[in-house]
Length: 299
Image 1: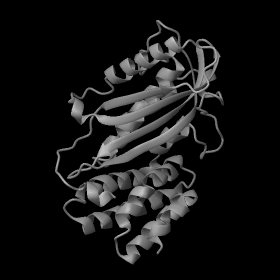
Image 2 (image 1 turned 90 degrees about the vertical axis):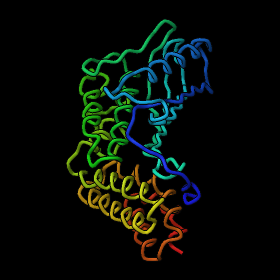
Image 3 (image 1 turned 120 degrees about the vertical axis):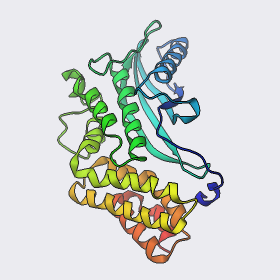
Image 4 (image 1 turned 180 degrees about the vertical axis):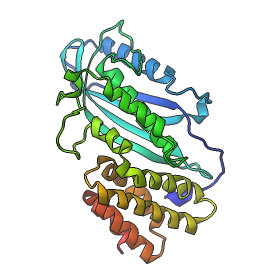
């Protein structure tokens, strides 16, 4: 229960990333298992030693991201097809609770690797597909974290994520199997291109303001003012609804509504009936597939 996590105060600020990385190989056929171990070490070294910003941070201040790489196919000993399961959390002021700010499964991750390879990143040039994917998500997560502490605070990070997309070679950016799908006609496609397009789109300015209000004036206020925090969170959801009404195919809105549903149900179960009904109404609109989770708010 969310309420049980409210116990002690802490000083919080947006920080760089500490990755926890797991690599699963349920169907490995041609690759040497030793190659996979080397790959895992290489990825850990790349992600946890990469300076994404010029900020100086302590280890305990870094954003926590759990990254699970599942290799589903290895057509050759050095060619791999995989999925990424990403979970990023943000600590909540006055508690030991950590709120999810991004959770996503990307099932179109193709890359090549052999022992001796290393990953290097330059924002102005393309190196390889996996480097671009990992760098893209790192900037996206940093942007969301910064947005949660300041209204539109993630602008610079989202621009960098867009730059990662901009320097992709045509064959990568337009390839349907690569997961970028820059030329996809459907704006609600679950592609990396449209996810960052959403966050940079002015139609979703209210959503981003609401994301900030939800965290800083909602969750972070909860330990000292429960009623005020709930009120601010409802206002934040109304901002999400405003953006939805102007861009109802935006992937980030349905994604975030789904991510936050369990948290919101937990927070609003003890609330007044009118508040519960309003939260349920908005979440049902933003993410119809998650209506079953809202039963406790509709009683």
